[in-house]
Image (tube, rainbow, N blue to C red; front, side, top):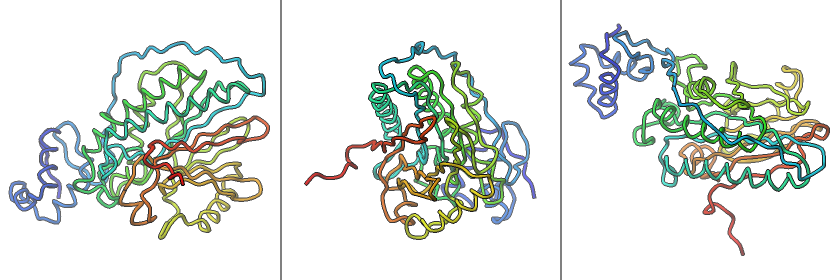
Length: 355
């Protein structure tokens, strides 16, 4: 059974009423059975801007955001250190923009994102005293927004806005601004992206129907200064090279967690992917809201990135910890690979206590 919906604003009102518990009234107004209404509403992302049917499991309609041309300060290479140049890498993931917990909301998200920028450049300047650091690679590891899928923990009261606004009113302008600010301090900024699990539209929808992908597409199509390159995902993983070393990035929900990070299962999965995808030097993932650096084999290391959100129900129930708001940044030498790594703790309240 299919319904002819009103315009988009009116459809959103119906969605809000459904979430507020007016299901019996809506069934009477629309003239459908409760089971059919539930299916349509949980797959509401197929609602388009004109009077069309709701399609179960279809991706949300793409929104192109027109932003005014962004003018930035011209980058001038720093020539302090005389050593071999290195490329800096910054991992961004599990931001859950729009989620609300006892220690996290949209304002906290913005503050912690600003801290990432400040701390990253502080480390950049320190290393530029030894050698040139002119290029930055940003890896977005998914769950950049909280989404609306109740099966992924996005339930009533867990977010301060809908998924569309999480993307276009919150994460998109904040991340675009950060990338432009980074471009003022680096000659080139490359952004590689993978999707997470919280942005999944529904259980029935394709994996590509994901709010992370909407965010990445907006960043790709936005008018940006020269030197910023965005590479959206086409599969669950992204493979790319930095200084001749191959990196393998994925979100991490492919590895099931029951009580903490499943290290044995993770190593086994990575070794299988290593054989399947022709090998890689470094694996990068998020998902577990916990940071770590693991040895996969004698030639392969794995970075597990932290999160921005704290006191998230997933981490508390599945991992058993609130999680520390932190993200990795590290340097890649063209012969030695990763030579240094810093874990950026973004809130002093989560620093270890001194004796």
